[in-house]
Length: 308
Length: 308
Image 1 (cartoon, each protein chain N blue to C red):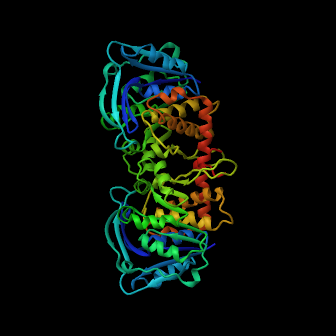
Image 2 (tube, rainbow over the protein chains, first blue to last red):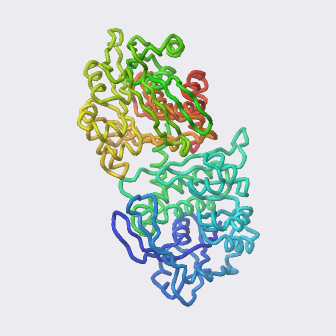
Image 3 (cartoon, rainbow over the protein chains, first blue to last red):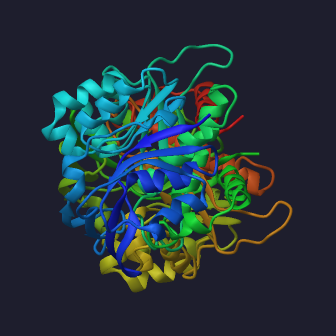
């Protein structure tokens, strides 16, 4: 089944202990769609400026990603500049230029209307909601957000959460959104806002999948923890969370049935894609990747966690 | 096989968001030995003051822990007072009174001489080394330490590390001791100092077992990550790390052979015991525990992490 994703397609200037890169193609929708494209068909809704040309278009085309929903307008694309010099796990933002994103009004191509999966990447919840409402027929909706929206745009975000099946956020975001220092209690509070599944990303410690209810008995859904791979060198963590989301949601979309086992494997594929994203600057590693490498690493994750 | 443990038997005054307890029986050797006692015979070497009486003695006796190596002297027992009010994962120390511990000279009872496993809990590395050298026949030696010794007593600690098979420390301690911000590289640096196995405890995110070499092929030892249980309420995390060590080392001592599979299961039992320790103040939960509860939770940990 195909996924439609709405989010940022942007340029990132990144500095990490491993070096510096200027104006790499990035943005949440870019990382998400490259990652998910190894599992299923992906369609992107975004806006770019005149600085997005055939070279950038080719990045998506190489992964057969549908870009008919990427609107081209006058001006410059979204720009983010940040560094990870003191702490490789925490970005310090130097510059955020919304540029063409400031007036973004998502338009859904008619050709996207039969997408059964929808991913609302981290953008203004007003836009997330508009896209969600324009695609009422989708089977499964997942989304991401960040502390800025949680703190300063809470009412709009709460409206979005009502329409989500799955929310993917990190530890801090979960505690702030759920207004509770205890992760399990915060997760329960967040799920009461709408999503029946919450995936909390712990960075270098993996991720946890929570369910709104924990039915007992055969095949019951359950809390599940996927590890992260202990990496000898993190070149650039930019986009690791979006790559996780792409692997997780892409794998789910590839499955004939959304069984508890499918969700557990999806958590592993999310972690796998997040680990690859960190190995090179920007999207470089995702561009070079093969499905065979992905499945080999899936087995490494199994070895890393399984008793037998 | 029996374990001899040397470390502190102490009183703790603890404040957490769940409440406050004055002068609970605690100390690394207490938590370690209670935890390990569910798996094998344990013998303690420590020093206590006149405030350690029959009631405290009974805590060890109830778990059939050999206390002939606990020396009774004039004065007061080691006292620690701390709180976890801002961050449940990080103790803030208010008072540390060494008391009788200041002049501690570990003496090993003749009856302990046939212990095949030795655990050097977090005490002055000069004392750890003395105990290690007094028991040259032990089959497996594990130890713990903390930032104070790493930073201010490094030469003495490096001598101890040469005689360790297994070191159990946390993330920060690993990075400081290994002088590297990357955990994998720091772990390798630490293992080059002596221990062939390093267990890095990640608190609420579980723990990782690293090996000095990663041989390939059938049955090869491998890096292994055990989760922690997402707990709905952490009453008191005091002693969770020592309880982890007790479960880990106790389980290993109970095994006929130290296979890679035994180490993986030991990681799970360590996490299981750490999770129980957090459920009540001080040692309360460990005192009420049964082996059946431990094995039931082991299965919960398997469910939490295994794909099938």
